Amino acid sequence: MAHVERISRRRLLGSAAAAGIALPVLHETVPHQSIHQQLAAASSGGAGAHGATAGSHGGGNSGPTFKDGDVVDHAANGFNPTEILRDFDYGKARRLPGGRTVREYELVAEDREIEVAPGVKYPAWTYNGRVPGPTLRATEGDLMRVRFINGSEHPHTIHFHGFHPPEMDGIPEVGAGIIEPGKSFTYEFEAEPVGLHLYHCHTGPLAEHIARGLYGTFICDPKQGRPDADEMVMVMNGFNTNFDAEGNQVYAVNTVAFHHVNEPIEVKRGELVRIYLVNILEYDPINSFHIHGHFFDYYPTGTKLEPRDFTDTVLLGQAERGICELRFKFPGEVMFHAHKTEFAELGWMGFFEVA
Ligand code: CU
Ligand code: CU
Image (cartoon, rainbow, N blue to C red; front, side, top):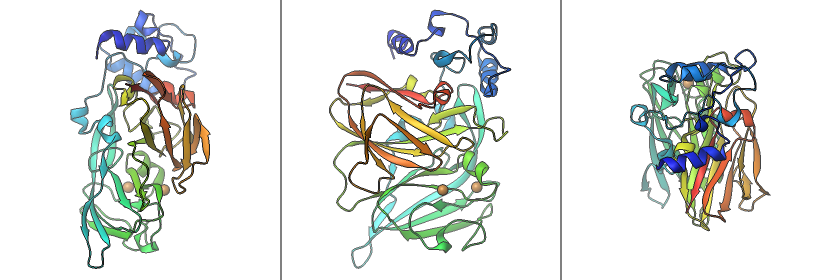
């Protein structure tokens, strides 16, 4: 990416860092201090710029968490959020006698250290080595067979949102219950209802098992499909890197803080864009999504085919999700972020590059 482009984007963010101005940090009053310290420690020669003058709250949008040109090691992580956006797992599909489709998926729990912001490593628990886990996708009425293999050192399950009998619920002491390390189980159920759902581990302590990274999106498409669109999945998440279970120190969509500031999401002007938006944040009761310069149709949980709202901001509680549909009117860089603005300043912001 050309340097001049990055500068212009940083000017949009009101960056003082681009102009070489030292950024004030008030560690005493900022609850999210851990990431500041870790980023300062990880920064080569940058530590002097952080924490010199006391003043405003963390430096705002151009605060110390925002590091020009510094990105996480995606190869070491084993996944790239840009690829996760449009990566849908339809499973191994085949027709059963009688015409019904069965889809077989495999999810392996795996402990893995991932870099969630430049220099900030987090001991994650993952499905298939990535956070969020694979986006499982099926059409209503399909038979889902999800083989779960626990390759982690901890006991886990998979709990799906959607219709299913209690023995397929993935909770302790019901059905197969907790799946111990080295063990496996196949969850089987019909894909329903139509909509945007999710799955996550349901082993206690529950908040930690989710927050560590054991979650993903489950999309159940209507039989007649939805209009053609450029589709993408945004899982709003965060990381409580100091394990105090009070808020988070890093916020993102699809795990890596500020990723789509460094790599804007490329979209075409006028084309229908469909965002499957999921809030899986733990330790904060609410999250939000806001887009600049545009409004979108909003379908809560995606269960109805008519939008409920036409808006530019939605609030989502834990596990709440919805489909956003829009067409970009203007070329250029369009910002999106949490309108819970402290989350934005700690990583939950990005750009669309409209061409
Ligand atoms: Cu678990
Ligand atoms: Cu849930």
